[in-house]
Amino acid sequence: MSVPFRYTLAQSRITNITASSYLLFEDIYLKCEVQGHPSPDVWWTRESVLAFHVANRTLVIRRAKISDIGTYCCHARNNLSYVNASFQLNLIDVPSIHHIFYNAILHPWDKSTVARVHIFIGQKYFIECISSGYPNVRVTWKRNGVEIVDYLNASLSTRVCQRRRKYGNSELNFKKVYRHDAGKYSCESSIDGYEYVDTRVLELIDIPIITISTNAPKYTLSGTEIQFACDTAPESFGDIEAMELVKDGVPFYQPIERYSRFYSTSRFVAQKKDTGKIPVQRNN
Image (tube, rainbow, N blue to C red; front, side, top):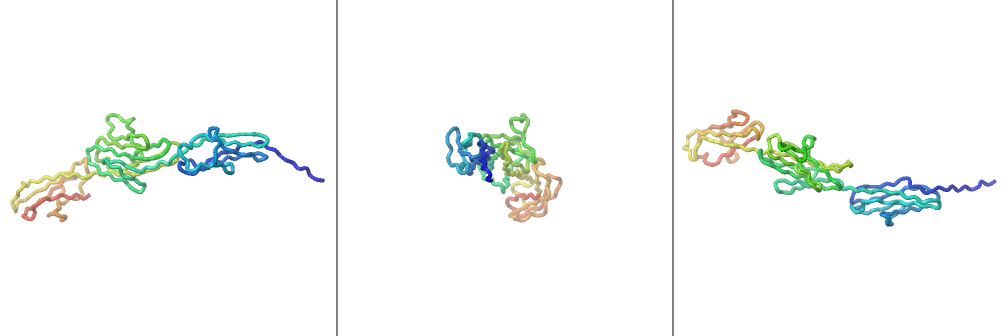
């Protein structure tokens, strides 16, 4: 006895829509997963316009650009029913820091480079971190993992703050640099709602400023004892560990006598060969 053939019909049903990527400038594949019997025909539209480049129920977007952002609709139909489902495609450009601006010069800034900026204590400085990305890139300056206060939340007494610019830039502002401002800072670029973060490191280095005084007149007789005093401002440097008078790259007489953390002197008897400029070298 033969068994009768059973043919089960099922209405069209869209079970899932996925995107292979959300990154700008990549090829993106929108896949529409459907069920039904007989197998439904599938096509895509965007704003009621038929979308091309469809293969195996997948819409292909080549080299996605900002204009490709929008709502796409997957349609499925068989002999029993018709259904459709919408999918919102949002694209991002991964945040990337590429330049730092200081001393009126734009400098390239790659991930492997620590940007070193020499500063003078007491001066005003503006250092800008420049990033790209889409949409709404947020650039943040931090020190020791703590975000530096935004100027919108700063008071009149705030000395250090950051000013976020449009198009992915943020400026680190010092109204006046103090000694303890020297050290490492980080600039982070991110997009809210996404895990992508790009980071660069900045190091501020204070430049030694040494005051030299002497009891010697411009013209000194040979055989006269001369004293040189070297002074550094406490707010500018750390302790003086070693100091010496150097002339033409050669240590000049005896090492300086260290009287305090910031003040040292050296005495010697002047000779004719000592005529000329005597620079001071600081080692610490």
